[in-house]
Length: 240
Image (cartoon, rainbow, N blue to C red; front, side):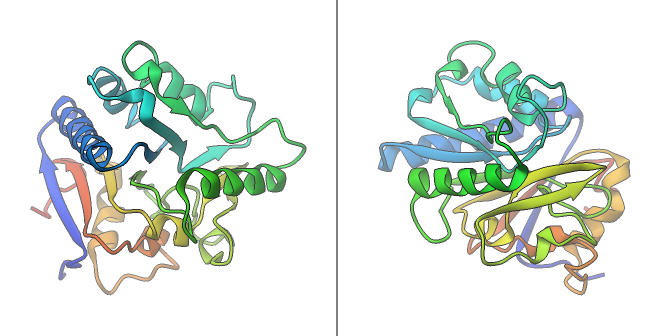
């Protein structure tokens, strides 16, 4: 199997080192943006894998008061629900200073319906980031064992939405608000964080230039810059 030249695979030993290097890369990216502009906008992934990354990131002495933190996707649950990505970011990245000084912009899951929340989040992105689609400085994405990223799940309509910045996804029985492929592609920098042997096949498919985006929607993310994939040994078995 050939490897897609749009990706740079970085294989890292152990969960602790994976979290440390990912946090360091994000911190450097924020610093570089803020050396040139007044504010920096990043979108973060949900799930279990990034928690350790966010705890370390929040300890970095960065100008957090100039950082806008957004979400790549959010489950349609109350803000205090244990499965809320916004809650997870508050409890990790923003748990203590200095990370607590960042500005978190959650999805309004208290809106009447998911579509209303999606439209509101799209307007927020336009206001904060500018551009059509809005241009985020950095997006951190996860990779599902089924090849999804954000809430762009295979076999659903969300991956095919190209005329909106934010849409409704459906995954594991829950509606979700998610950034669309065009918005993810507009980001200045994209990182994937991949951990565990359960992700090996999905990672191989992501790196395969012949793989279909219908089966692996993560393939839809194609920014102008090279995508960096940070993976542990278990996920990248046989690939590096």
